[in-house]
Length: 383
Image (cartoon, rainbow, N blue to C red; front, side, top):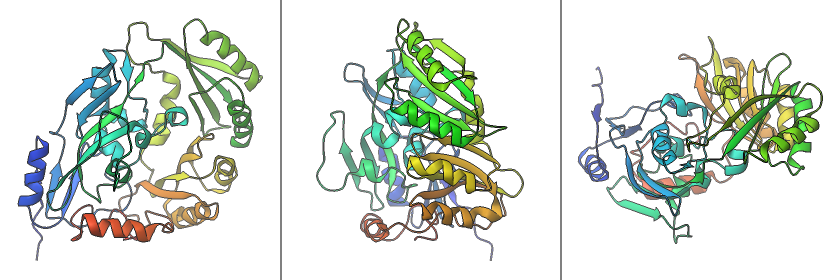
């Protein structure tokens, strides 16, 4: 018997999402721009797909409070264009933003970029959400005022949930000013040398925004600074002295017109982080204590690496057959790991060993989605 293709529903409002959940029986997949469709566990069979790309746009922007509420299907790069008119930005630079990643998708996958060192990830930038649960209940958590909430903090639960608890329809975000200027300094060297430099750097008063090592022969450490147009050159000079011979400035930009800042120096980082695996390979995101990251990376059979040596988060490309061993190696240093891409026919575990809080995770899933309608397979083999 051939299974019929699942119906695709394209709601344009939170109310339409709720109606779709109520009126559609069976299991539902939640999709956005599709930039993370191969991440985590392979989705199970579903009866319908909720395509949220039409649920897009800014709902309310409060420049004075530096907050903005948006529909979950809004591409982040479009949001950045809107708030940049007021000299503001969402301080997130995940690699796939350039490919159209949506606000809801970035929350659901717990994605972040190099500037998470200072600004954190989406978990730190989200101050409120609206979520539709499996029974059609619309739950609001937080809002435009940063505060604690009673009961479940859905804004935190939805972060990294891959849609397993409900459908994220609205997100309230805290914004930051666009910096007057940025500078990027690079120095070549292996990961162990880079890690030693980063330890010195984070202990210094230079306040780097990002410290990322990109693999190569021998590899390259990129350090980004932000600041005023008058003071940044002095800090950049001190950074060059700290990094030693071979360090060089590779990108400096100002934002006198109030637009967002970017630099070509980070293109290689984005390419490695977002690029698909070659042949039978797999891309895995790992996280551990920063002090353990460099030694861990040296033991892995990686063909490409980007590593936040100050945050303990890295993205690595390895042969598909090495994925189980990678999960074990990361777990041995009390870290976490999850597949972010893989060859189409690769049969490898998406996640490492289940965390100790898995019983709590499962209990929340049963309470919010007792019939397991959402995101089947995404956390396999855990649940």
